[in-house]
Length: 257
Image (cartoon, rainbow, N blue to C red):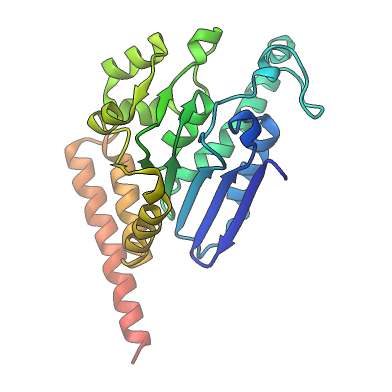
């Protein structure tokens, strides 16, 4: 679709939001396209880079869809409130699928963020494993100001990154978080000048592709599940993951002879 550029180049896939005239505001159709892209991603893709065309990463949901106007035949978000519960849940689950695949253990996702990352834009950045940002970045979780909740998968990674108390404060006040604070809180991994954003993401991508994919997949899965396991369960998960790695490495070694 014209609002998104979705490409695959060997082990690297790229998602580019391409609506700079509205600061890359998002629509449910874009979320569906993202979900479809995640579903059809080739198995040899190891890194996914998400970025926005123009000076902003994403200003969130297209406000016309919130204010009751249609966009390209898509109905206003508030009309969901009139639908049966099961249908509402199914629709929102479909929206969430456009974001959640970026957390899959077999890929590492990088958000290259400049300018505004608001609401759905913030949640898209949070869906990614790593965030490289420019000094002009401005994060804000705006949903509560509209009477809504963040429902695109952003609440869990936000709490994991900044803790419950800070996450609640950011969501309840909808205030701006700029680059220095984002780095301090752990929302941003790296802050670089705008002219260095692409090069830094390229260098990071190359570094992530260096280790064996199986090792990265297992390590990401261990880290993603660590907060939900007891210490003993985490030790058990590490043992099981290491056994799988050792057996795969042995099999690879034997096949090479």
